[in-house]
Length: 101
Image (cartoon, rainbow, N blue to C red; front, top):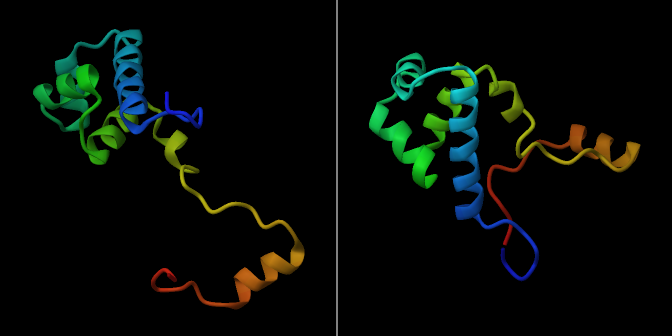
């Protein structure tokens, strides 16, 4: 863990790979079963489960096949408005097309 007590991306990726594996085994599926249902290769799934290295698409396809895709719906959603004024400001102005320096 880093000094700020936050999980590092590599650590989280490893945890996610292990969780996918645990869910797959809980369902009683072999890697080949999940890979076929998700439309991914067995070797890519194996690499994800063992190393955490993969594409976002593989993670989402695996989650869908395991009935857990809905858990990603709120990931990285904008924070809720802190006041009615802030909410009205968000709704009244168009979203910026690019970030500000």
